[in-house]
Length: 249
Image (cartoon, rainbow, N blue to C red):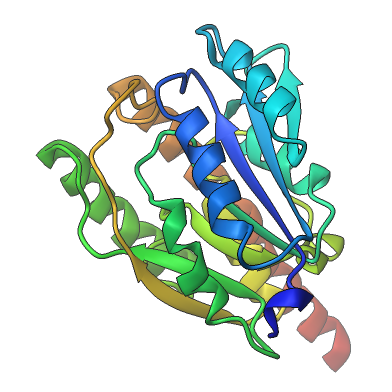
């Protein structure tokens, strides 16, 4: 794709990311400027209680490409992603988290994989830079979700993704929790869209605190995955079997 043809929306979900969100926004603008003039940078602030909003308002004052969406109450990670997809207006959508664990300067490596017939370019972590317990839990999570949901990518929780906006004209996301990533990849795959993958670096969190890795959150994720499995796997299989039986009658 010629650089001048690139039309892209970049967005970051943000929740109490005052220490990293400014650098993420500025780095994304500096990365995109040499590539295209047709871009926007969106931040979905999901009810932050720190000074993230004040920082974001100043960024918007300085950079006209910045578009802000404020959730007055925390809607969860899935709720933030759904707002980002609904707000994005350009042909391609790229998103990553606002906590600085991925380097937005690696976005051009995803752009290089764009081609006719490719709809999603998904990153996968070269090496996970997290405490040991998170690495272990992450590996278990990857194994279970890939096996149970039949996902076509190797790293479903690598939130470093480039997607065609047209995808969201065909699929509807429902989850408000972190299991939205499994729901999204499963639905995109079943809708017949095609994937490419790119290795990306993952960095230690330098500011803030993870919202996902505690026992209460793990229990909620497990319950959410079970519900998702029932809706997207079990009920759909039953529906297919029912239609096949009806066709034979």
